[in-house]
Length: 149
Ligand SMILES: [Cu+2]
Image 1 (cartoon, protein in one colour):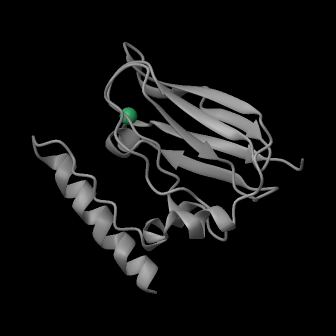
Image 2: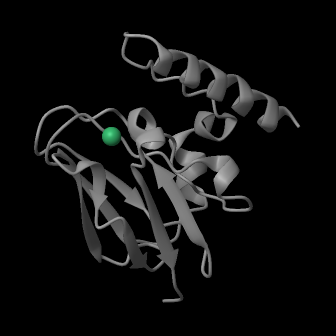
């Protein structure tokens, strides 16, 4: 119940921020995000060495991940690379129920070439959902199909 309440507050803050002229703050109060790195690492699968590169783009077509959908195995790395615009990667906890090892909301990338790497959690059979916090309502969402090694 606490998770749901906190998420509601975070969502409200986020939506309120989007209505104004100020840039959205990083209203990241998801309890899952407060886990220490060691706690997160302990439930992550061993890295496979496979890296999937996903571009984060803002252009005449809008704001989007390219590709918007990838298929990966637990332990693979998702390497998000900023091409243009200002974006982040956020695997939203409430949209990925039952998945352990989701990364916290990623930092806002602002300089082309900056990256955010995410290790795919042990969630075989799941279709993970993610979005970019400032552009989620504009359709900047993505999916990761997690398949067996
Ligand atoms: Cu974005």
